[in-house]
Length: 460
Image 1 (cartoon, rainbow, N blue to C red):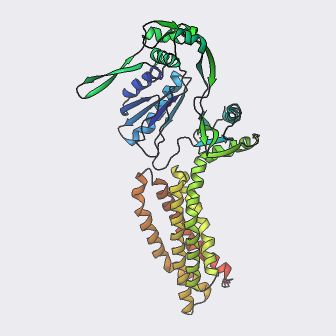
Image 2 (image 1 turned 45 degrees about the horizontal axis):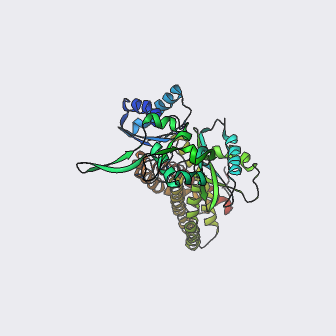
Image 3 (image 1 turned 60 degrees about the vertical axis):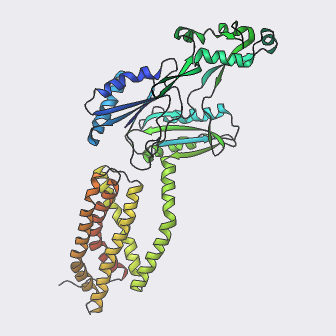
């Protein structure tokens, strides 16, 4: 589980803001260990997790619990702690997913030409954030370009600096020494090497930004110094710390996390508002995140589904040497989604990519059951029975084999219910096949009698 803490002002170090939360986690009974990362995310130790880039206002805590069952109560306690202590930062509590996962499920990317105006991109993103702000289905939101920051730009006065014998390199070394520090050597302790930095004291560093005009610049090969204001004019400008490009186009992405709803539910409510945003010429809106991942995963199945469907239809037509039995089978398959829907709603599982694979395999099982029943009907008719009686006798005689085959499959996938990755597939197969078995014994005979126009016998 990961806790991400972003958006903290630079004047307040992120480490100071994370210390109370880290101490609370270490004292929690559900927590086994906590790892902290400041300024950027950890290395990509887990494939589905995208590491966060370098950002001085970013911090992340990775929490290990004693057991999987401890995650849910810990998340609830964390949300209460964050709400009670309050924070002006964006605090995300995220469980690591099993399999492919998106860091932000909701991503609306505005892109422009290669040299698009940053102000225009930020204005488009502000309109997108306005559509999400205050929405009951949105938990956290931000833009990937983050906030603009101030920078101090020294304007080198060449004529005065030459008289003072100060070069641009001297100014660069002096500012680096005053703030970040300059490496001047290495300290060896056993097998470990530690860099030695030369920099101003903490008190001088705190006042250097406000009193940078008086920062002393040391000349090369000299111990004398001159104030910064004597060799450069200092100007304060705003800049974009992060420049994002998408397909060689400048872009900005509105990112959000759904609150207690799925991404399609949130998208359906805000999609008209995003489509209503007027885009300048050359600018585009691209939906990334879960929508793009889902579309890409589903499109990857099409090249295999079409040939498989054609081959299945060809085999069924060749098996029965008629067109009406395949129609009966195809009309039966959609009813299976009733059982799938009931199973997913009862267990709270999502119909994701893995569940889609289960539904595809379930379609093959339903085709097999229908073929068994239709083949038995043909055998009974060949034996001289009336068509109506053949349908009844076939349904009765094939009930046990079809039910036992479905039962063995349902029992076989029960162990998958304990696995987080395969639980949606297991629920899809179990619920769909159980309901589909009933459909096979009821719907297939009804559709058969309807398409073949089998009259029911007259009752006395």
